[in-house]
Amino acid sequence: MTTVGLIGPRANGLIARRLGADYIEPTIVGNVVLFAEDGTPRLNPEFAGETYPSFAILLPGDIRVADPSFDIERVRSYFASIFPVLAQVAEPGAKIVFGSGAARRIPEGADRTAAETRFAESLVIARDAAAEHDLRVMLEPLHQGETNLIHTLGEAADFLDAHGIEGVPLVADLFHIEQEGEPLSTVTDHIDRIGHAHIADAGRRWLGAGDGQWRAFVATLRDAGFDGPVSLECNWGDDLETEIAASIEALRALP
Image (cartoon, rainbow, N blue to C red; front, side, top):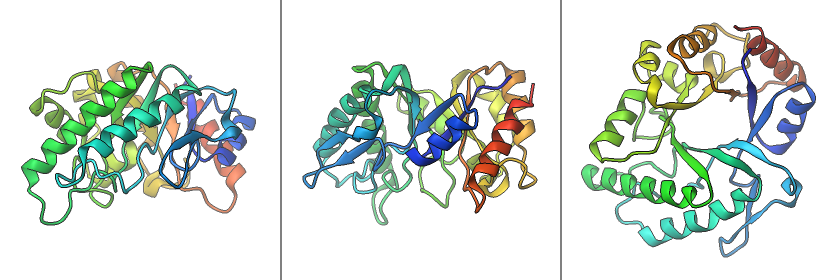
């Protein structure tokens, strides 16, 4: 039976917990972590005393990790300050999803090679800063509508290899896979590098609302040997509780 989680703000997480989700993958920016006017992060007191196995939305858009002109010390400072806060509410070895499309967008006119080098440097800084607190950064490919850097599992693997970056697993997100027209066979091809999974129906709707490949996606993961949890990342409609409950039930029903 699939272990089911839900990505989202605290209010949605509380609903999902009540409806039977195994875990919550809370968003970081503006949810788990709040920021003072000077940018100093602090734990949202609503989360105090709780622990979570994974987190999403690591970066605000103004921390530009693929902009060669952006001060790398600001990047270093951000990661050095954010992970100790997350560690207060993280399970040992918790996953930190590095998606954050706006933050990693290469600015118009920037040298592509320099931008990719800067992103690689930023990713290593994040990996190492997280590891100091027993947290694991994982790279999520995002579709072209969200960013202009790393769109598929294949591109992510090639990027990490080209820059000699080890110790950064990949996140297989079905929405981005479908948006990019990436075949599910790519999941099998990179299964030894996949550390986490996100799921939604077509158009990022709740499971059962569309004609997406979510059943085949889970089957592909399982057949290839991935036995980890799967987090729902959906754009919920007007009937939030019904849609969350249906999505949890749908995943639970899969082998």
